[in-house]
Image (cartoon, rainbow, N blue to C red; front, side):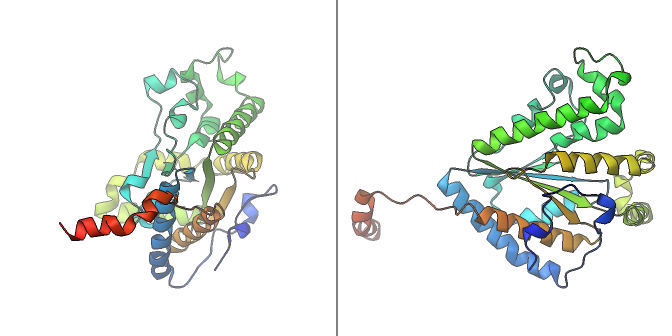
Length: 285
């Protein structure tokens, strides 16, 4: 099966040169086995209590983020996994720095936090739509003309520092870009229109954002190249085939988490010496 090195970004890339199309036969069946392994890893991570895992998932509209999260993590103990979907910042969030709302959503040790859209929205959608930044009321930023490439590159460096800090303190940071083709997005948007029960997913803004496809791709490429680090790597996942994308992400997660060799705590000598006595007490009730 594919290993994570194939999809990990270690050198500057061009998204236009990376395939969006990959197909693994029987991927749905294979994923069922992987889900059990992922659940076991999380249980052991929880018992050990040294690490948490932050799983960041980004992608263009219709890239399959929601369904991927549902299918990959459905067997993980509900106690051990939390999903955060970051929308437009609230008034309270805007009154803090841009990373605050993400910091307070980080996983406890032993748990997984999944960011469905992430802190990278602050250098993606706000770079495509710089007027959004003005709501943050940042000193020395008075108009969109102040929002230069240097501003966004500085933000990316703040993100690198944030991720380095949390990784040093026991948070495993893994970031996934679901790499979708523009043509496949078209088919998925049409499907939302053609199937009545999926109509609710469609918004006129989807078409407006689609017209900005090239700009989004350029912003993703720049962000991935500047922020894929050894302790917080990006993985670019071909996303035109949803079952394959889900299996690839699950495989990478398992491979990366296994590197930490989680082990449950050992019992004290006193407890070990008295296991038979404890069993006898229960059996003799």
